[in-house]
Length: 329
Figure 1: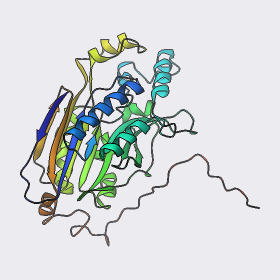
Figure 2: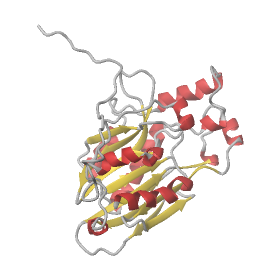
Figure 3: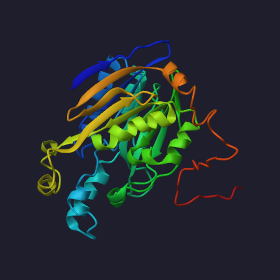
């Protein structure tokens, strides 16, 4: 991995060093990918980061087979085979799959935003694309399940809920995160802005086409720092053991995901331009004064809001198929 540090000018003391970890998963291998996440987190901590973020669905990987294997075919044995492996390799937080990472966060005092495929305990065999936030004490601060899987993703991911639409304090900043195309959803963004968000983490499976324009737009809209953090996957990195590898490779270019991680300041200008085609852990030191400066003219949930005219209701109740009221006595 290449280590890069970008140090913009700092005018005041409200500093926070953040890391963008653009890494490849060991595709469809939970343990192998988590080992790489731990390695990258250690590297971010060595560079002085108080926060490190990773791409969407990184553990155990994005379902790239969907568009390559005509995944809408009903009752297809090849699709069932790879889907069964995907469910098996998904992350169960209750089982302790992320416990070593949480322990590392506590030991290194570093917060983590990680994209996982979450398989909740006691909820059947459906999975969610979730952004997990672990704070610097090693606590699970929030688990945000993607509100609406995009297009073919609906063939293997369940829709999430609003329970994880939360922000978290980190130094002078307030941090929130969204998964991939959720970042296009104005009301999802507004739900985070209303909670004081000024450092937005957008996680992506990988693709400069996703990050180059939207990152700067969100930064200018929110007058916040915006980190877009992507995964990466090369065709040649697909493990030989995965089902349907030959068919997936035959319909893939050099990259299934080319990265595109980047960081914009609250004026919409680049702090780190999109990084394409390589694994890296990149850090930058942010200054909260820049947020305050840019909000002098526009604060989307402050002096430029009109709650008497426009307001948003957010349901943060965790979805369940049943609610039980046991009779007492």
